[in-house]
Amino acid sequence: MEKVKQIYEGKAKKVYSTEDPNLCIVSYKDDATAFNGLKKGTIAGKGVVNNRMTNMMMQLLEQRGVPTHFVEELSERETLVKRVSIVPLEVIVRNVSAGSFAKRYGVEEGIVFDEPTIEFSYKNDELGDPLLNTYHALALKLATKEEIELIKSYAFKVNEVLKEYFLALGVRLVDFKLEFGKTADGQIVLADEISPDTCRFWDAKTGEKLDKDRFRRDLGGVEDAYREIFKRVTQAH
Ligand code: UDP
Image (cartoon, rainbow, N blue to C red; front, side, top):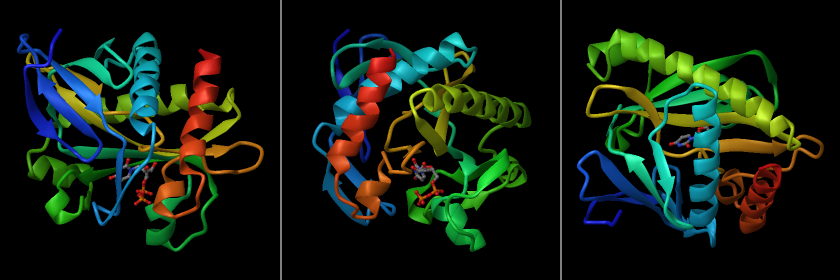
């Protein structure tokens, strides 16, 4: 399958149409942004890590009953996916307090929750992705009640599968962000990416951060962190 025309360029990826109206090609860049685009940079090799890691996670999740947009890895940085319209909700699942949760509620990072939490943000850069609840999402007609229920159950399933998977690699899955899409025939599928850009990974023994927080917080060793998490994932494969 060949790229026909660029239809979208985001912060970390480009999306192209193909000859098949139901398929797109995603191309992963090394560009990194944080704080709603305020901080910009590049992370050498990130596009390759995020593409290949996302594809491995999508295939694992498909096997475990979560439908995804994944079709076929085309190259290091490019993947064929089902064309979807993205549900404008960012779905965040957390197992341990960190980031905006710790800040918003005035607690330290690293508190292990008895049960995972879920929250939604309205995917809208101009508004700064404001937090909303499912009633707000319904009022704004971002999705139907049934779709929101399905998204919630998929999100918790993703957490169960990935939490166990990463623990076996000596990694704590602290939190992550998911996006879902709707195919032409109305099916809700997991879309976007699952990578160190969208998950917090802490080494289970040392607590070392193996994700984009190294970039966000200027901790150094950004490329090494992406390489390390990728090494563990590929060795497990
Ligand atoms: N996240 C993301 N994109 C966003 C916001 C958050 O991928 O626009 C991910 C982030 O990497 C982390 C999780 O979602 O794994 C929770 O992020 P949080 O709400 O704590 O926000 P942050 O501290 O990253 O601003």
